[in-house]
Amino acid sequence: MAKTRVIYWFRTDLRLHDSPALRAALDLNAEAFWPIWTWDPHYVYKTRVGVNRWQFLIDCQNDLSKSITRLNPNSKLFLMREAPQTLFPKLFRAWKITHLVFEKDTDPYARARDAVVMEAAKEAGVEVIVRYGRTLWDSDELVKKNGNKPTMSIKQVEAAGPKIGPVPKPIPAPNSMPDPGETTLNFEREVPEQHPDLNEGCREKKDKSYEKIAGPNGDFAVPTLAELGFPPATTPHRGGESIALCSLHKTTSNATYTATFQKPKTAPTAFSPQSTTLLSPHLHFGTLSVRQFYWDVQDVLSSYKGKEKASTPPTSLIGQLLFRDMYFGAQAHLGHAFSSTLHNPKCRFIPWQLSNAPTPTTTPPSNPASTSTYTIDSPQAEAWFQRWKYGRTGFPWIDALMRQLRQEGWIHHLGRHAVACFLTRGGCYVSWERGAEVFEEWLIDHEEACNIGNWQWLSCTAFFAQYYRIYSPVAFGKGWDQHGAFVRRYVPELGTLDEKWIYEPWKAPEEELRRAGVRIEGDGASGSGEEEGVYPQPMFDFAERRTICLEKMKKAYAVGLYGDDHRVLDGSWKHL
Ligand code: FAD
Image (cartoon, rainbow, N blue to C red; front, side, top):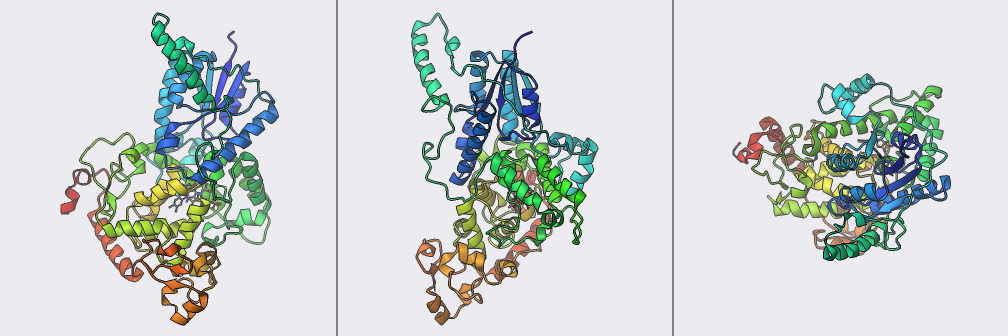
């Protein structure tokens, strides 16, 4: 029998514990086993990734590599710097691979990429093994059990999930890892023998290609931020399976917190420590298994005997994980169409003041993100968008949140509610797609399915329809933090302002402003907000904008168009 030579391809699962795909790979009892990560140019060039998420990813890779080496000093995580679509056919030949194993990824780009890799494997006679492990239930199965429809409510998930079966129990981490085989990349076979000139050219190409793939020192090492040309990260949040498991343990060892967790009762203004688990970036990179999270919480619930009643979905911790599965189920069914308004049968079309230009086509683009062009219907809305993005709206609660996001890469869920509502239907009337792009760049937990789904929820374009419920940029924060500690932390120019004015500094008397060393002036767009002691005027009268937004939403709901309507696609919506 042929000896098995296995590549394990780490992607959405940078962990050793509870990984069904890794278990399947190890069960092959390989004579040679390469744990690898491929540097996908899609991630590098197409996805918006800020420096904080890069740092988090590098942390995860370093931690994983060390854990692999602890199991086998001859092994580690081999970082390959080439697109998987072109790299794998070469690796299959050079290393005489018999099996390729990876965790299932239902993101639309990942599906397309994996199809190409699987085709190459087929041609090379390599067996591919795929296991799901990223969600509680396999998202495609969830869709099937939901009547072949995208999961658009948590009730649908609660009904469809159990039809698949109970959430699988976690699998222990392996306690050994086989040796890798040779790591030389001999791609010479590609060179046609009969063309000596071409042969020469290719040999040179081969050497360069090796250097490119294995990194500057030829050792497949995890890169540093400096090597990638980035400045140092500003986030205090660090990645890696070791930290993820410690954080989960810290959460679940507080049985009362875990069993009685109610999301709407957690403070978005808490920052040291924050009021929720902050496990989202670990789930994103797969350094924490969601099933481990689920079962550790269930274990606490089954032995909980506290005075306070245990919480239940949707507000409980289990409920939070169900929301995550819901968005993955919606994305798994809708594919590329899920990420935008156009062509999306589930997303309401709203003629935002700053929006996507409807393209007169009936075929969905292969990757809407790469083809999106924006019509700036209103230069004022563009200015508002920029002020929102950089935390200079003149509303301290909104600005504090956006600055926390930019600096640290994470904000509380209700903070995300506040800024998303403000940008879209509750203030600026800017398309949710613009906001989602900013989150994509700055969040360390950016997860396409969750980001897109939540932006649709907050903009009342899908999942949620109560557009008349608008958050006040003053009362919302104040309700949680009367003294304004959160605002003072992230908007230091207002640090010594009396709490009476901290959420509405433009209303403070001159004398009070002088005492606090604050000047309220400028439009925030010219950078005046960054001058010491200067904070911008609010960019609009919120009460006025609220009324305008409500009227516009009411009209859009009455017209009732969705992203796949021909009137949206051919532009005739303008005449309605
Ligand atoms: P906890 O409250 O401790 O919840 C535990 C876990 O449940 C989270 O780690 C997360 O994996 C999951 N979860 C909780 N709430 C949600 C939710 N509403 N949707 C999906 N999963 C949830 N979450 C992301 O993981 N990635 C994103 O890119 C993302 N973008 C968002 C954009 C907007 C506009 C909004 C309103 C929410 C977004 N969320 C996103 C959801 C949510 O805000 C974060 O998951 C949560 O704040 C993470 O903090 P935590 O780990 O402390 O959550």
